[in-house]
Image 1 (cartoon, rainbow, N blue to C red):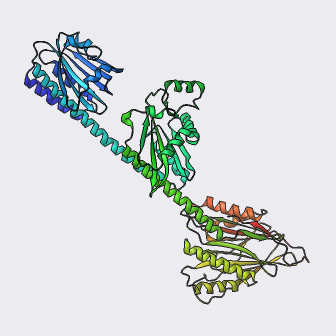
Image 2: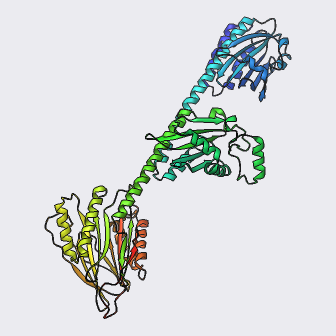
Image 3: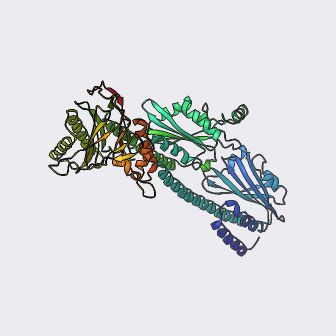
Amino acid sequence: MGGDDTWSSALHRLWQAASRAEEVSALADDVYAPLLATTGVHLVVGTRWEDRQILRYMRALAAGSDSPVITATSRSVPEAAVREPGDEPVVTRIPVAALDDAGWPEAELLRRTPGATFVVCTFRLDHRGWASLGVGVDASADVAAVEGRLAQAVDVIVACHTGILQRGREARRGADDALLAEASLQMDSSLDVEETLRRVARIAVPAVAEGALVHLLRSEGPEFVAATHVSVQQRRALEEIGRENPWLAALLARRGEDEDTVFLSGPELDGSPFADTADATDASDASHGDGDGARPGAAGGDRHSTVISVSTLRARGRVVGSITFVYQRPEARLPSSAFLRSLATRAALSIDNALLYELRRHAVLSLQEHLLPSQLPVTDQWDLSASYEVGDPMLDVGGDFYDAVTRPDGSIALLIGDVCGRGAEAAALTGLARHTLRTLLEQGTDPGTALSRLNRALRQERASRFLTAVVTTLAPRADGTALLTTCSAGHPSPLVLRSDGTVSEVLTGGLLLGVLDDVSYESHEELIGPDDTVVLFTDGLTESREAGGAFFESILPVRLAALRGFDAAHIAESLTQQAKAYRASGQDDIALLVARWTGVPPGADLLPHPLQLVRTAR
């Protein structure tokens, strides 16, 4: 037998190699050669088994040979199941002549060597499988010493495999943590419900699974929202399954509020669109030449069994939906239940935030609508229109308001204003200001007096916010012109677009409302002619700022002049959209009120015409 010092040195080198190895197979040379150098050993052979009886790998090296015999296979050897060890390694001596080929694939190789006895150590590597390491020896071998060396070599192999698994788990945890962090960033970057759901699906594929479906829980049951797959064709099939498949719908309904992630495979998928059958896959491929109807349970040349998992999306004590993953990969690459729970929790919170934001958005928009007039009065003398654009992405209720009212003398009063700040308090003040001005102007109060009385009301209510406003009355004259009377309380001056394309500013000014107790406001008068247009707006329009720092205010007259000849609705909407496109910063609301004077024939009846009501732009 080879000397103990030689074996000790070889064992030391083996431990060193094990500390560096990324695969157990990398230890083969350091294991086989020293064993083969042992006196009486003529053959060293190792096997790797999965699922008790599936031979995955066999490697043999005979004395006098420079190259090993390696067999990689997936052959089922049912009789080998009895060899499966328990938790501890088992060393066995068996005469080569007694080996049965049905359970011992090593037998054929052993018979080619002079050895008469097979000394083999079987041991468990992990929960999925086991392995063996054995030698063929003759009568000159010290069998007890050989058994000791086999046991020592197996100790190194098991330790190496355990270390590789541990490092793999640590790397997997690091990758999982990075994926979860990235998923949170991606999902939290959108407050749109459907976009968030689509991101949930996209983030997981292919890092977590080959396919994913996301459903939102509605009162009537699960509602399909998004699906994705590494294959475009199979993504289409998944989308169809998500929308219409009764098997999946029943599964999701049964899951209810179950918080545990469930994995389904094999017979559990019978009758489902994910069932794995090669015939079904081939038939699907043959009947759909372009693959549009490919079965999601089949991955083309990849024959890994399909597994699906279903995770409930729960946030803040309520179920918001579910996410279903489709896997076509080895079992070792399936995510853990803990990882899926963590991903589902993060996804559920992002989805719930988006849902809450959606509810808030609808509530805010509804409240905003109630703070603005639903209709504007229009006669054949005036073309009126308005535009309102919410600018704050957080969607607090804004303080911009406008209105148009008819007056007893046949004139029309236009008003627009802006309360400082946003939120519930600003909304309350907006309602007070608009309805106060509207009531006073409908009664025939002149613009200056109306603003003074509103200021007094704000001071009496101890309003903590100030506001700006401008009021303009448009009174028809017998010569076809109209008298424009304007009074401002710290608000941006209206603009007048003349029929010849020139643009002028209505020069007027006054103190903000709600600052001092006794304030009076002076009016400015000028005439406008047929087809002249008056434009009132809030500072959200003028203060839209481009990346270079310039304000939309600097180009507003030119942009307005270019709209000569258009009706009021087109002017209001066009200016709003231009300001939105212009601004790189600035998120204030934009409100516009536009009135085009159509003209009155000389001697026409100046009493109020029958009114029509048209809906305002929101």
